[in-house]
Length: 113
Image (cartoon, rainbow, N blue to C red; front, side, top):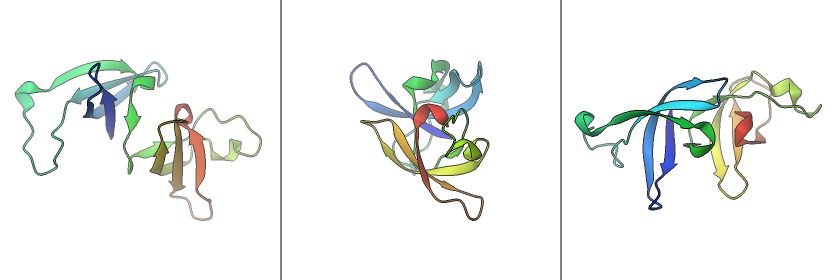
């Protein structure tokens, strides 16, 4: 899974998310990764670090699982697997398309994936 992090200088860097910790509160990431997929990774320059999940934005195409949905109209989506197809930075809302046949795409807050 790839996530974007914004540096103090406002630069967007891509990292590989290795795992979640503390019930998803933190993410262990490694990077930064090359901006061009054809570029070779510089493993000696990459660092592994733990960051707050709220500081990372999953990239479009990232597989996700819903959790913590409380609205009666959306609780059936908890535990469902989908893929991010769009993302609104202003509202921190993702458009998710599901693997399970018959489920319509849904918009949810970033903290619920």
